[in-house]
Structure formats: structure tokens, C-alpha cells
Image 1: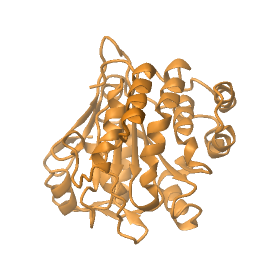
Image 2: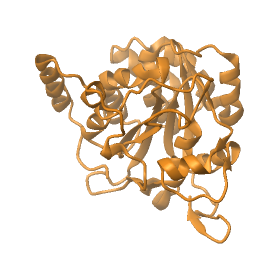
Image 3: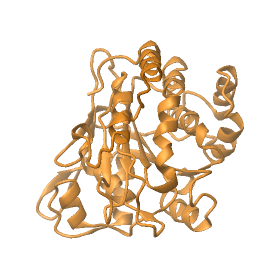
Image 4: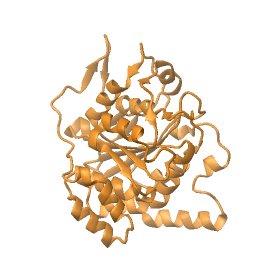
Length: 319
């Protein structure tokens, strides 16, 4: 997947049409949908980021966000800021041939739609995928959501030419404000993803497997229910170190993602990225500067010398 080219004109035309007709950018959810859209169903699915003549050096970027409780407004913010995100990635040359996938995370213990995963896209179909997300707004109410299930999917159900051809990791951004469960539960994987696991997978093992192919970041935005909660931040910093990032302003999420990718690709340093935001008229410069201070030197997705397969007890599984 990932063919075509993003067009701000197409995005603007669709936005004007929705405003004129009174339709929502999230019409599927706002119409009362209570089950995953077929295009975003993770069951028996694999998501691919592939090279093509149009995009010979694809850079996969996945953005998964919690849609429970106060976090259910995150996709609405992302949808309005898509042009800024694509503008920084493409026009400023932060990444070669970016292909973006959006998805949503709920709670597999109680939500109707605990995981939604779009496809990697280079054109306006990424906006379509955002509009198909069910903004369930539920959650278990216990400071935990099923982030580990989403990480499992990304580790075992994605294929990227960036990794397979060039040994370069993609970028995964998880936007949330709660803890993951301590294990990837085999029964939830069977129900939601369709895999038959012999046993539960400990969270640390799932993260180790994920981060081998994905530079993984956890964004904790202000205004969410558990923003400022030391337990949540400590939890994610224990798992991801400096890649657990606090955002003072949810509206800065797209700029933060773009500059993080630019730093990781060594296309810019932080000062250059902040100047780009100023020139673009962004009001997010202060928030992004504070959020990414720990990543100032950038982190390049390097070629790995490890084998690309794991023995899972008699069965060889592509990672």
C-alpha cells in the first residue's frame, strides 16, 4: 500500500463540502457505529508499507491513539492538523516518501472496538481512515488500556520495505494517558487479531519485539485524564526511556510527530525544526521545544545485524 500523492487541495475541498453540508469528518462514528469499520479491522490482517515507482524509499509512520475517555478528541485534532503534518514531512524533506497509518486503541476487557488499524497511505486515503475510526469513549476506568494489544499487532502484523530492504526501522507514535496491561493476553489476541497463541506474552517481551523494528514513542498530552500523573509517566519511561514524551498542548501533536521523524532521520536538528515551525506560523514551537528537548540529538533508525525471524517454539515467525 502507500500509492498516490497527498493533495492539500483535495483535503480542503472535502473540508469545505463537509462544512457546507453539515457532515462530520468522523461520520462513521458520529452516525452511531458500534463496530469496527471493515477497512480498519485488525482480525486476520497485515498492514504493509511498500516501495513503488512513485515512492522508491518509503518511510513508514504509524500513529495509534487511545480513544477512551478524555482521549477521544485526539483524532479530531489530528484530522484538522493533517496538512501541517504532511507539509513538514514532505515539503521540508524530513522523511523520504512518508507513508502514514492511523489507528485507535481501546480496552479489550470491556470495549466493543478495542483495536482499529488503518493502512499505510501516501495520499488522502489516510484522511479517509481517520474518518472511519469509532470514537468509543469507553475504557475500563482503572488507569489501564490495551496498548499492549496494539503493540503486539505492530510487531507481528506489519511488513515494511524500509525494514526488509534497508534494515531501517519505522516510526510508531502511541498517544495516550494510561498504563498498558502487564501481558498480551492470548484470549484477546485470538478474539481481536485472530492469532492462536500458546500462552500470554509478557509486556516487556512484546515491547522488545516491537522496538526491534519500530522506533516507538509514547506521547502523553495535557488535558487528558491522567496527564501529569507520575505513575503513568514513570511506567512509560521505564519501557521506552527518553521516548516517553510529555506534551503541554494536544494541538502540538502533529508538529511533535513531524519533528521527531525529522530528528530520527537526521534531516534536521531541533533548532532547525523549531525555525521551520516559526516560518510556517505554528503556535506550537514552545510546546515542541520542551517536549523534544530529551531527543535533541535525534536517533537514527539504524541497520540491524540481528536475524529477521524469531523461533517461537517450533514455528518460525517473521518479526
